[in-house]
Length: 158
Image 1 (cartoon, rainbow, N blue to C red):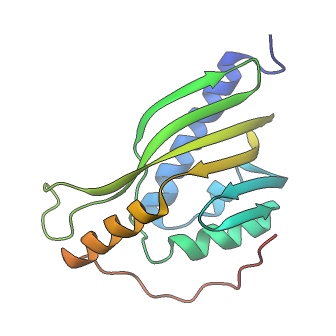
Image 2 (image 1 turned 180 degrees about the vertical axis):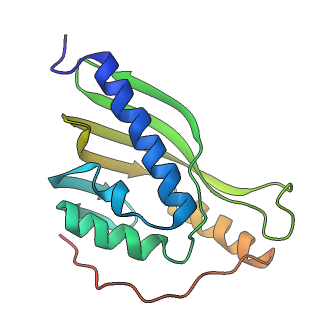
């Protein structure tokens, strides 16, 4: 058996989903950043590697600013209590800008989370096809989607 029980991992992951959903709905990513340890290692293959909660906070605020209502519905997840990991696939989804009932614009991401205890994650790694993401965003813009322009804090990369 691993360091953390399956029940604890599942509860922490459900909390991660809830906080992510709220951040997506409000555009405020602070509570989401607070789900990580102070020394988190975050790997985002299109943007690079980030070390530290405050660096992740700055990065996520900047990268999500143009897309304040992008959401991330879960397709599936696996809890590995032996390792203290959760692996999941979600969609990076933008609703149709002209027809909310129309087909969304989305692309999948596979993520690995490593649990540190106390409802905090010490590692996240996101994997997706950046070319596909770019094509989806271009199609969303062509359908009438608009990026939000706003000032963000300067981002520091690890």
